[in-house]
Length: 509
Image (cartoon, rainbow, N blue to C red):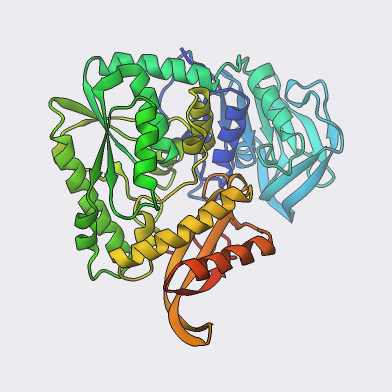
């Protein structure tokens, strides 16, 4: 039985970061919203309450029932979580005289407290709250303070319940990782045995038990998630896994053949489907980004459905769903407003009547890569930048045509090849090129030109939720610009996108 720590989410922007820190410490954890917490058995070793945009004094503030946990299991309240435990059990939380945001230093640390062993006096922590704990019951022992916050941390005597009014999960809390490790190891008694290898072994065993001799269909994209999912399933059921890789005509230059060869070299049972003409026909005349995404998604569903029917007695549909997708779907406020429609196999209709298997649904993106590495996945696939499901179709602003796709493929090929040749590819989280619906005047030789402009984009990120533009060497950008203009007919202007996310998305559409 896999031991775990439960993280109860109150809507904090940092909740996923708590989970990532625990995973880095080789402890399995799950995030659940305060209003939808499932029951757990003996595998549950401890509970963490997250921060929140709410105040405990708000009429609509979250009010979870802590009866199953407080005094029975190790419990750690972070920021709002700490204030809730204080407020709910006899303490007082009031608006702070000064807004407590940003860096602070611990002026008092109880080094004998299990939670704070190894934490130095004057250690920097990160505050983010407008309320503060004004008083606590006698059983609450102060374990750390800052110059402005007396109850920066407390421990309830007679039980393993702790509260801290700062965020140990963020980078700016210098010894935050020490605090979290103290909690999960010293207080919760976790064995820290959740590793990529152990995940592979347990997942393959679970898949064997669940699937038996059933046939499974998986739509491959060439990306890391679907590739790792395929490897896990292949280990479990071998040739009963039927993979389908669709060429939508919107892939990068040579990508269909190269990725297909990579998959076949891995021993996977893969069928490549050339459906370019179907996608181009569906996209004819469409300019709105959402219309294009929906058209691409519909054709993909039709093609995938037709191909899946050729696999007799298939009972399962495999998907590369990862944990952030799961968290999003069960969040405190439910799924967030649509910024853009996502395109993947998950959009398949109910009429396909297939049961769903998601081998990666417990993993973050960086964990997927570590699992792939532990299974000796090729570096080319493992290190591949994220690539949108609709492909170049959403990197061509306006109507998509085969001619425009060809132009952008050539531009993108020079851009990506240049990043690799200059040792910059692995420093970039995602890179792409965008064909703009803009023509500009240029001069080539003694002739005036009136041709298209392209934008190059390269960003750094960890999970795609936020991103910053990459500060690539100017000499490199100049070389790439020159090569594109000289080698790609129809392009006479190259720009570099220096927008960050937010406010700009990584893709232009």
